Length: 92
Image (cartoon, rainbow, N blue to C red):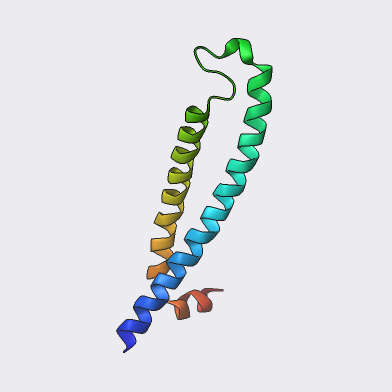
């Protein structure tokens, strides 16, 4: 019984941290896309063989950055899930 509770708690901690990381990544992507659209229109002459609103490029780079952000939050989430909650509370 305790093993199931422990696994459920670990999954909850991991899920919580991943959701927080995904929210931050989504916010960063939204802000970054807005800025990128404005900046690429200003720098149109410097873009070689890519239009400022090239949808496949924008989607590809956004997906890549989103995956990297999720992976970057998955590693700390796994570490946090391994920590005993009682020890973490006592340290504070």
